Length: 548
Image (cartoon, rainbow, N blue to C red; front, side, top):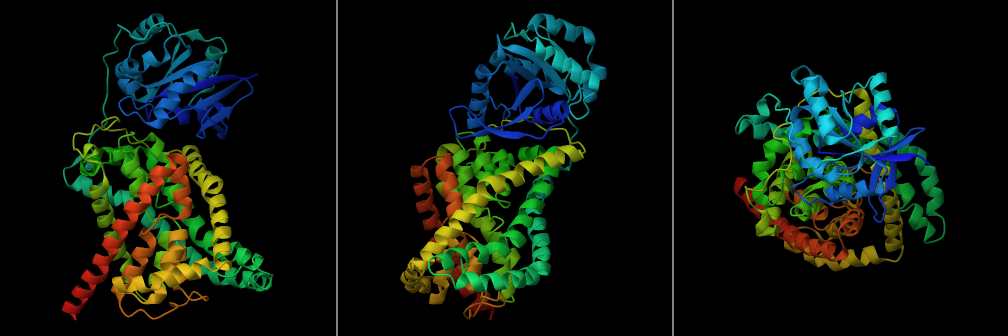
């Protein structure tokens, strides 16, 4: 049986990169004992390395607790600390591994090696009782690999939880434009939204160029399945079936997810994400979020599912606020392309920028109104290094990060998408979608919308591509019914997109937190969406009348 080695360390110390360098393998996903949460494991002929989430000692995050629980279940421990803050890391983390067998690996040695003498490390080794190995996690030599494996084959135990010896050498990265008052925050916001904007724009260009050929190739198949007896024809074809939605999934959603993952992996492996986190923390703390939470919300523009799952690393004080922000304001890779497709079909492409601005402002307002008062304080401590070092990302690390995000999409979001397609097909066959649309039709007048807009609101609440299905004609050229003004187009797209989280997101939230929280989130989001949509509809109508 292979020896299991768990890696423990703070965030951004290079644990994942270290394992990839040691093993040269891709990660396998495995479920933590007694939970439904996965961690990444890497296997060699002799060892099975477990990559745990970064420790956040002052934020009682789910992942911190899981990482600590993992220590007692494994055969060995590698305590990963960074050369730029050895004393602080040992003070924080040594108590967690006391009396466990293992070793210490100091990463980022290329930045500090010439400043730290070998004598002090030897003294630390004798005091702590385990070997200390220094290296650059991104460039581990064959001799360093051999040293690590030999140490783990016969590990010694950590005999102290506190040391008297101090290295007394630290180093902080230089300040950059992100630390410039006001300008740094503006640039950080632009950097955060850049991946979503580029991903959607380029994915749409790609999708538009291939859509006709894909649609034509599927047309004969759709004609066949649409003639199947009910409900099979509704499950596979018609307006909501799996085959009918295949072009949208492959041409719009998947490229958006992939491009977003590419840009985001560059941000993460370069250390840019941590810089943005620090810069934006003071801006979002009064809204009940921490700087790290903003990153998770922006991840939702790629896909809400991995974004919600990633909130496990948030503090329990702000995690629910972060999930609410993702559900309300993170227009995912289904919602945003569908929205842009509607604007394009209505010949109102200029509405993209106003829509994103309104979504941003109303999401901030929603957080301010719904977040518990105790979480809204500028004194919320940011549990992360003051500034992380920026570095050039390596190809291997970028590919590894892309793989994690894309795999999450295919293993979690995509299967649920297929299930939702089947559910939508059944609802269509049973006439429930038509009945709900009929019931909501009179309510549309409250938002200065035609009755036909109700179908888009119903479908958008089931899954976000339903925004386009309910508004675009079957040939995806123009709208199904006339809408007289840009304000009405903006209103219906906003209402359909924000009224409820899609079923995929709702399912994930229920699984991550509980059903009670999900139901409470639905009620708050519905009330806020109705209120904001009413303001958009009639406020925009009033402004339009004045300008005209």
